[in-house]
Length: 303
Image (cartoon, rainbow, N blue to C red; front, top):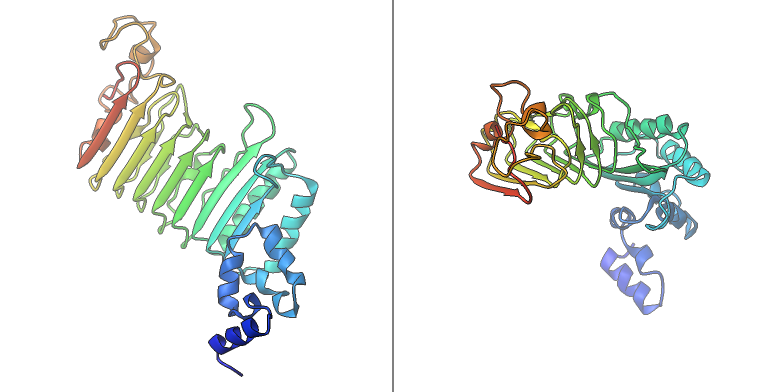
């Protein structure tokens, strides 16, 4: 059998299948960048391609074109068969991006997520929305447990307390929560987390979320709504970026200087911190070597 390089030269000379001359691991790497539907369709190209998609390390399950991301019957059946036929083949990167229309599909999608976790996924991206204004897809209220997950990206998703307790994810280092996530939880907790970004998302208006991440080296809190979270001690913090916008309720509604002495002011008197001795941000930010604080509108409370 000729060496691979000679085989490719021969294929070129004869006008043959140059891509088919590539080794299986390289072909599977290429397939990992395709949406799962397209990757599976390659099974009809030739006998050699029939099973390549089953071991692809990158799994991208989307609900159609970017302008019409919809969870439809066809996608439901496709994913059920896809995960079944892959068995427990290892997954390096997985992206789930679609909209759930029916309440009946919510537990099904949660089961898919749990199956993917069992496949030792290292990077998991969830961009799962609900069909309808103000309706969120909520992942099930069970903690994640994975020895392999290193990066988790959550987009436009409703989040529960247990799901953001990462005691069972000792390798998790990156957490990204962006683009309209509903973060109405008591605690985000991880002892292994090194980089955290929460942007353009909603915290609870009536109770503060505590963030416990003692190993954090990078923090980004940007353009979030409602109550600013309470930061626990972050002794390893190198860089932090915090920007407040008008939608934050941690601001005085009646005065440009703290405080307005108006007991009806939600920002000054409703809930300044979890208790009178807690700081909101400064306890966590005090160790940062590089700190950026931006207030685009009014004076905010950091104590």
